[in-house]
Image (cartoon, rainbow, N blue to C red):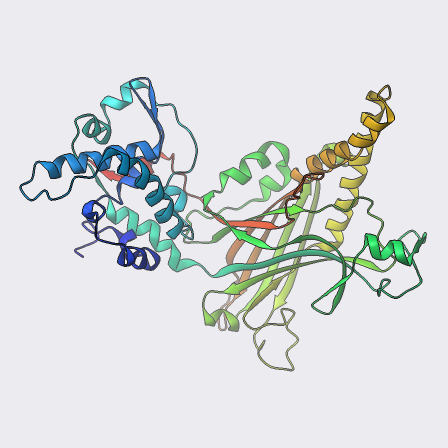
Length: 459
């Protein structure tokens, strides 16, 4: 394969090698050296002669340039039509991007979806675009050595997110009780309680409401997409951030949780909010470490006494000897960790979100007092949910996972988990699931000048 300077490290990615091995060689244009690199060449949208070229269009230009050069050869046995290029390029790009979605540096190598508006002067200095204009393959080459450094971040992943569940459980509902009470002592009928709180059993707990359950993975992003808002909206927690200087120093993860808010918030007596965040170890030796978690959480001043409410707590939640029956380890499963969730504090925030939504509902009711009652009833829940969603979106929270290796004298910060929250839209024909999307975050920004200078080598 050559050295790091001549070989594309992406071609060694296991999922990609399997994909290429299964493809038919009918159209050998895909085997052309450097075609996969063209995915990167079109990472940003550009404007050429008053026409916007997105990434797919630039790749098509690359393919056509390759075909043009092949037509000049003496062994041209097959000419691919433009219609075939238009059809196959988007399909191909979508397929290969999916193969690399687990990369911590995905946003550095592939299209981030952000539009850019370069001026025409930049076009003349871009050797790749000039080559497209001249119907030839660009001479500029990707800097494979730099790519290899970015892909090397995969070797420094200590933990992975496996599950995120937020739910309310209760000892006051067993499905058979003739009468139950809410947390204020108000009687609730058993029939009504079972309808409002259909209980299920999860991990030996009686679950009466699930705020979030389920997990999806999406592609990486720069950490500034999360922290950028904190600088203005949550200065207290922003000032506490101590981001690593390099992605190899500490893993950054984002959890974006969509919460299924309860319409009334009236849960039976002895109800309890619980959170279960499960992470798995990337290496067996982490089982021998002691682990602790530091949680920082805040919400904006306009909802709390004209200042940022700031919450800090530290828990030890894993110790060596987890596999032993007599162990007092909190995680309960030697294959991973159950990260502590600040359920008591978050329960308070959910009540505040409900109160804020109700206050907004009252203001809205005053504005629409002249409307017919039917119209008022139809829109009654919308302001509540909208107000609660505004509240949840302004919660800032992150958790640091630390480990202490046997024989070590210091705690090592292994990961930072950044949280974002929102409420699920209500009243839709097909309600969206209340779940969590997670992704890798990175210190590195694809718009950094040093990145743009290193990603491509000009001849």
